Image (cartoon, rainbow, N blue to C red; front, top):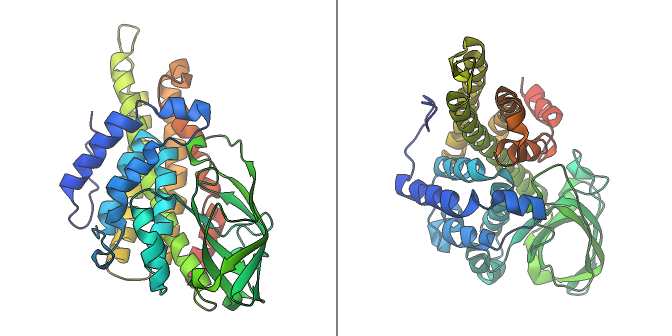
Length: 377
């Protein structure tokens, strides 16, 4: 069914591509998502999704397809409509892929970018640490220069794809302050890298998120993706893109859950009529769809700024903050409208709500988004 939404992308999108993504999500992701969630596994299917769709994140000069950010927003909506956790792993990988493509290190690009685009390597973005979350500038993972190598020591926390990643984009401190932060690409199999734990989170278990430890891990000079003075800016730009992506995925998850709940309400009869005939229930759904419409427009606004080459930090903060709350509240109310049946895992709402609960604390809390917005007022 359709929610008859009036909010649409501000610019043209690749409709043929989106149809392909929709078929992929319907045939492969949605029927298997609950199984993956219960087993706490990231499916090999992620590599197939990467092989098919990652190239659309990358410029044509690097053998990509250079889809608009507006199109990417719709890709994420569709995948998250099937399963938020799967879409989140996909998006984080592509953030690494995109940041790699923008590196000035041509040798590194040629070595790793094709593998990232084809799913031969899954990427992970390592910025957050056990004691450096909202204050990303305070990272303590150290990189010390020894000859032609850098020696990494420290820990990284809340690493999406930690359990499956083949290539790590690591941000480390070489001195003091943001100007001394440096960004490396290093393979997961390198000596001195240990998976400390995988988190047993409330939801989104397909993201296999965890903590990694670096102990005297040697990284060659040639593996520098971003030098001091540029690395922290690259990390922040990656965070802006991540926030926009989370908003897109929240919108997709909310839309699919509302569709499922409304369909249920039209079929479920009590007191001689479908429960959707009750005005009180209709108004609950109406409120949540209004918030979905607003959330989509905020997200498309951020996508438009990125497509136009404008600074999107503020727009990304607005849409991420609004979308997370709209999606979580909307799915929670949709479950309530389904009564006790909404709690069953045979429906997608419980799985999606559990995954949406992590969005408040991913790539900037709502309070950090308010900090960004407040400074701009």
